[in-house]
Every structure is written in structure tokens, then in C-alpha cells.
Image 1 (cartoon, rainbow, N blue to C red):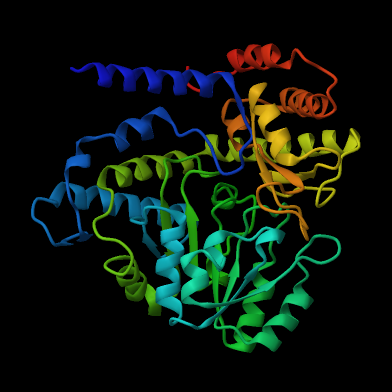
Image 2: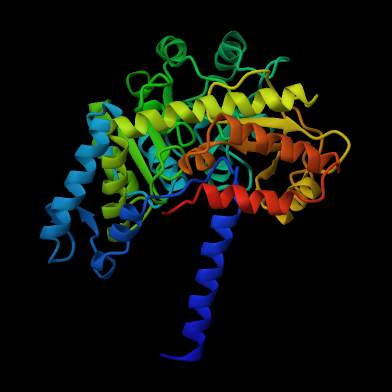
Length: 401
């Protein structure tokens, strides 16, 4: 074993210690279980499994076929779906395959503006979705909320082929049934990207869009608390074959076999009462932390949050500077656009906070209120000894025991 290998092991150890000693409030992240990590590192990493169960390009896939079918069934149960493709490497590739199954190149997509909380893969001009399709946007209203009637007016005027519902920094909920009615009236397809809220949906805490959408996509590593990857769901039988061919060979070749095993374990873990209680605590923690910021005089895009995350506006300091100061003191979060933001992506007006990771560490009401006050104190330069307090708090709530 050469010296460089030992150096790499040292780097892994440093990263592991860092994660244990820092509070993670990044809304797009969570901690996968040890079981899912172990299974996703299995010997299936050696197997190339191009194609679908019982219809592979290469031989020797019989055992993997069993595992992939189990992952498919488990995800179908989880989301009350009749169809599931568990092969996408990421949420973005899931979206790409969904577009390919629903619309044609240069067709018009209607999605939320990026600065209002949309996602890069929903039509950002520098993303493939903005290059391959004709993208127009809707925005939040003056209260920073989705306005159903305003969106309906945009639909009637723009006449898109596809409406995308699903957001990366929106702290309220979507009325899926309303948009289903509108889509029928205007003959458009609906893609619901639930990457951020899928864990809350499969627990029954937020309405499931599966019966109100042509396709549902999600990542597996946010509130779903699995290993990294994506899945595609649908109850529209007419497009199941299109989805499969849109992903393979349309978007990717062989799936990451060992990751599908890890996804299967993650899905089984989410199909439990323990997971439902976990997601309930996420909502409680999210509301308490937001309330603490509001009490301290900060502004959010809304005075309430109905999911795991929220935005806090930074007035007197640069959000990228605040992000760095917090990281130095042991708190991880990300700078983010505030709705109708006039600033650039490098120095936007807000920070985004998510409570999934803290809740995975079993932190509850008192801890999240304390963390919110730590953040306020650091922004206001009132406390220079928070780093040690964070290390002590993290030690009380380890990620992996």
C-alpha cells in the first residue's frame, strides 16, 4: 500500500470528523444511514448492469435483477405509485428523462423563475434544459407565494407544453389538485419535482402529487434521507415505456448498480413509523427555528414554513460573507437568492436553512432554537465563543453512534 493511499485515508478521516463537529443546515443535504452506506459500497460496484431487469445487455445480472425489482417495489409502496424507475444517477437526470418522455425538443416549458426558488434543471439558460427547450417562467406574488390565478393566466397566455411544479427554496406548499384541473383545461403535461419534500410526502405530511401529475421526480438524499441518486415515478401508464427509454438509452448507459442497492435500503428505512416520527420532528424544528429568527427581528420570504426549509434575508452584510463566517464557527448553510433578488448568484440577499440533518441527529426544540440564536449572534457579532459551543453540542448528538 503506497503513501498516497494513506494520505487519502487521512483525508477521509478528516472529512468524517468535520461532519461530526459541524451543524449542517444545508437544505439539500442529509445523513444516510450506515446500512445504506454499507450496501451501496457492495461488490455490485464491479457489475455493469445496462438495461432493465431481465432485459440486460450484459450477462450475469440475475442477482442484481432481484435487487432492482425490490427497489422498484419498495419505492412504489413508498409513494403509492404504479411505476418507478430507480436508475437515475441524480435528480437532474431524472428530470432530463422526464422531459424526453413528455415533450419534444424546442417545446415550451413553464417553470418558476430561478430567483423565486426554481431549479437549474427546470430551464436555466446555462443548463441543458434551457438549451434544449423554450423556457418561460412564472414568479411568486407580492407576498412571495405561488399565486394560482396568476400562474393560470401565464398558462393561458404562453400555452406551454409542460408545467413544472417543484422548487429548491420555497417554504410553502403546492395545491397540486388545482394545477391538475388547469392542465386538463389547457392540454398541458405536469412534472412535479419533489426532490426537497419527498420524505415529507411519503410520510403523509404533505399531499402526494402522484395522482395530479404525469411524472414525479425526486432525489433520494434530501428529506428522504437516503444515499445520493434519483427516481422517476408515474401513474400515467401511457408514458411508462417512454420514461424507461428516455432514461436508458436516452440519458445514461448502465446504472450505478451498488447505489441501487443502497437506494433499496433507504426506501425500506423510509417505509417505517420511525421515519414518519422523524419527518414530523423536521416540521416542528423548522417552524421553531424560523420563529426564533422572526423574534430576533429577521425577515423571511414568508412568516411561516410548511416544510423543512426557509429563507432569511441578510440586510447589512453580504450573504456569502455570512456563509463563510458561520462555517468557521461550525455551522454550514448556503447563500441563496431571495424572491425578486436584485443581487448576483455570488452575493445574493439571503441564506437558506434546512432542518433535515439536525433532525437526523435527534436535535429537537431547544437545540434548534439555540442554533438559531447562535446564527443571529454571529451575524450581529455578539459572541466570539460559539465555535466551542457548537463542538460541545455536536458531541451530545453524534451522527453515527
